[in-house]
Length: 331
Figure 1 (spheres, helix red, strand yellow):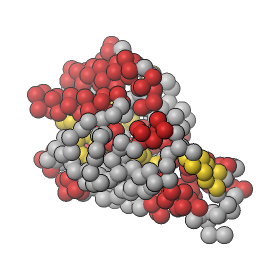
Figure 2 (cartoon, rainbow, N blue to C red):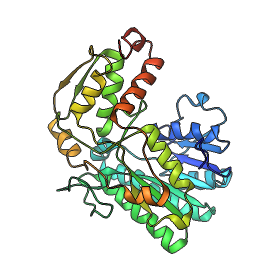
Figure 3 (tube, helix red, strand yellow):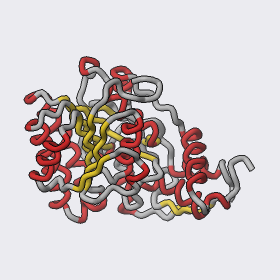
């Protein structure tokens, strides 16, 4: 990958979950680098006019003929599979969660083979782990997730390994920790870190629904996007595994609040832990051992908590009319 973060050859990228957090920002980078990029979702991706040249398609992963038709139409080199029902919704309707997250993924793998897709990338998650975890999670830690969302992600990881070893599909995957981003879905269990920034900048206050000491492996969105581009651009021979752990920071909820307050002492935070949410989030890893990613494809995060907070708050202030009325950092 060159200094601008562009992949070495022009490709056609077919991105499922196109209306989501990571997809919207990744698509913009691909288009800017000269790649044909198709955002696919069951709903129309929002604000797509801001991603000049990005194509969109409404399609349902649970309807195999729609996906088969779409791959035949666009003939992508690479599928980036980001579509997934969120963890909270998964617990409310387990049958639907399995249809979307697992059966839909299986049908997508099958369609990829039929249409000679070269590379299949999948975003997995820290939620594939659970139970009594070590402080730093090794890359080969057994996966015993506590929620149906994580169970489904493990199943798709195993499917990807199968399609790679048996059918030669170039399957690559990253287990993302909590992604801190302005587009985080407010209903997601992992969204508390992002919403602390978003709500504090827009309203000056935020109430955490986790404990102050809650600490989960995390990554800033710009590092997450760089990691996806990095593993996609890595030579196949360099990869020693199909699925990699990454992270950049592991802040507690209190440390997140402190980092935000450092930019403006008028921000106020409260803690009102939700027992069910705490049980789920506290089962997630606090820290990943990501040495395999660093060794195999030079993964290296740029944003620690202080750099993340400065950049994210500046970005939110520049975009929010409400935020512009608040004091700037350092005043």
